[in-house]
Image 1 (cartoon, helix red, strand yellow):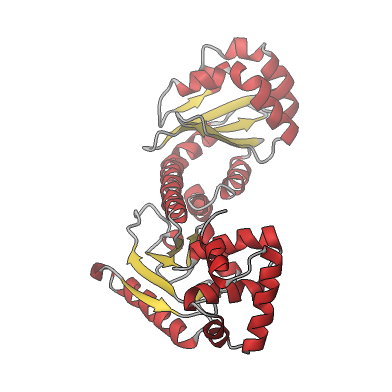
Image 2: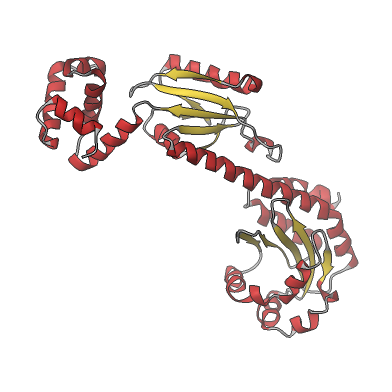
Length: 357
């Protein structure tokens, strides 16, 4: 089995997770008989990565803080351009490099005496190098093996960086909906939740939405079935633009819209969003206000629910009926609310709940 076949699955994994790069580098260095395989790079924004799985973490820190700016060999390697494979011993800078503190205090203790570098680049603007460090001189076989695997590594880097940008764009979409007061979840082709914003997470936390085996749902049986049908139809017929449904819960109705989500094919299939679920809670602003008043006055959940029902129905008796409690219980809870907040009439309570003050 050649190097490509042995490393294929490891390279595919790097698309979806930064954590997969160290595993790939460990396996690559073992197959090449090298001391270490290092991947480092960055983009114009200043963001950078440095994966060196066999290097002591203290040495990594020293490299970042002290030696990175002194690494003349890597600057020379970078000048060779994307796709170039460079044997560091052939560089004009190598003699000065071997006399430098970086080489003698950082490379030699780790037996990084010789190097073979592959320059990598992404169309997103990322540029970096894969460096094979060895304790003895680089062999012809190692050079040939790196040449053979180079196109696969380049493709992996391209997919990795594109996925990062797409995930960032998706996160911005979720955050924008969050600021607009909407819950939002990204769903895979199988309907599994891939990501969600803070508003959707709060709905999951307080039980307005449920997550079962990665699938979104709700407690009310009829509403749950309607939600499942909506998602299934949107995923099966993306050309029809999705749809919407109203679902019921213990804290009132939620308005749910499911729409196809355009995802670039750079995504690995399991991580590719196929639909976005947007949830609007008409009482969300009131809930936020009630949370603020709970902290301020120490209201209980039962009192919060009664106060919300009073605002929605306009009367204590109707609120009691809506909540399924007796009028006497509602009266006692309302009295407690009055005592804690200092208001004396329902109209004053509504004003307190609806407006800052």
